[in-house]
Structures are given as structure tokens and as C-alpha cells.
Length: 317
Ligand code: DGY
Image (cartoon, rainbow, N blue to C red; front, side):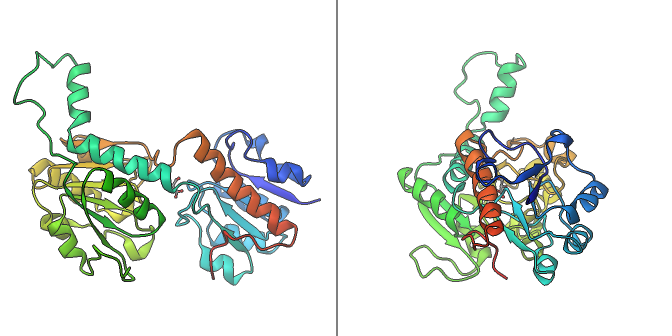
């Protein structure tokens, strides 16, 4: 009988493809707490598949341990897979899957939520209200930037970036985009520096990993308009968090809407205390339906591989 390690509790119904195929599921005995690296290494050779979350580090030690046993697939319940050493996985003959497609619209909704909330200073204003610091309506209070009609610069023009672009047309925004490969579409800006300088709102939608680490650093933050708003729903390390915090404190950037952090769950102290920052705890894909669909995409890929099929959501070698 096939055995599958599911590292954390998944949304209700998310295990269905494995249950239908009569697979033995290992995991609930761990409860909803992360496995230690030692537990992961110990379990890996005894299972055919690992269904994991972006908070699980699937490194060389886990993969080598699994390869010495029966491990065939790592299924990440996320579209990003920077938590998995997928090069090593591939070299050991272990396939890796992710969950593209099912979370695009929900994540794009979150990007728009952050654009609006940050541009209109929603967090600072709400904190004042809750803290009893709102004396009365004032004509000069909490004056934000308009989102409608603004120039939006989308960095990373994959499925989620495009979903954000579709929403932006409803706000009459002028949409620019940048990606490593020219899109050939109107609004494409080859030079990221130029996009940073021209945009009123910059929304990040690149993958994580070494290639995009600190893509938005102090130099690029300085290129942005002092009235600009930065939104990050991609991966924390894409932005130099310390530099972002300094830019907000110094008033060199108008506001930021951030859902992801360099060292989750830690958030840079200077960012926590920064003005005009809307900070969410990595909830980009966090709707009931989407999280269930992500779980189904991951467990569906495992079920397919264990039946000897090739699911469409394998990460290419
Ligand atoms: C992902 O899928 O990569 C998100 O960060 C979580 O939904």
C-alpha cells in the first residue's frame, strides 16, 4: 500500500484524491505542528510522497533520505516552491509539484486589497480609531493617494500579475509590466528601473529564490516616486525589508502593502514601526475555496504519480 506523509492538517476535503485511491496517510499523528528536520528525515524513506507546505524546508538531507527509500514525489501546497531544493530532487529522480492556477484570482484580490488599503492609509487610520486617537472628522486627516487612474507597474507578468492587470482596468489604471522575458504586449517595460520610476503603484508578482532576492533594494526604492506605493504579495526576500522600512520612515516612499516577509514569521522591527504600512500575515491565497483547491491540486498530483500518471502541475526539470 502506498504511504503519503502529509506534514500539516489540510483544509477540509483536501485529502480526497488520496482517500479515494486508498492510500495510507501518515501525518495526523503529528497534529498541526511542523515536523522537525530530524522527523522529516526519519519519515522520508518510509513514504512514497510528501505533501508539504511552504513553511516546510525540503532540503538535500530530506531528499537524500527519501531517495534511499521509496520517495517519488514532493507536492508543495503552494505555487511558490523556494522551500524545496528541487534541483537535488530532480537529480535524485524525485518529482516536485506545486499548485499553479488555482490561487491566481484570490492572490490578485489580495494585491488589490493592499493597493487600496496602503494608498488610503487604512491601517494607520484604523489603528487611531481603535486607539481612541480620532477626535473628529477632519478635512486634512489621512489623506491618501488615489488608486483609480494611477499608473500601476506590475513586476512579474505570469498568471497572478495578469490577474492583477485585469482588475486594474476596472480602476482606469494605466498598466505597465516588466518580466524577464518580453511579453510582446502593450505596456511592457524592459527596464525595471524605468518601471520603478514611472509607476504610482508597484505590485510584485515574481517567483522567489536567488534570482529575485532583493530585486527591490535601496537603489530601486530610491528610484520610486516619493508618492509611490509598493505592494508585495510574492515572496518576502524579493524586497530588502530593512531598506523598505527606512524608505517609509524617511518619507521617501508614500506607503507599502506587504503580505510576505524575508524571515517569516519574523518581521523587521523597523517595518513593524514604519508609518503608512499595511502588513498582512501571508494571507494572499487565503480564501476557504482557494486553500481547499490548493490542497486538492497537491494531493491530486500525488495520487496521479502513484497511479503511474504524469500530472500537469509537475515542476519542469
Ligand atoms: C504560494 O502559494 O506560494 C503562496 O505564497 C501561498 O499561497
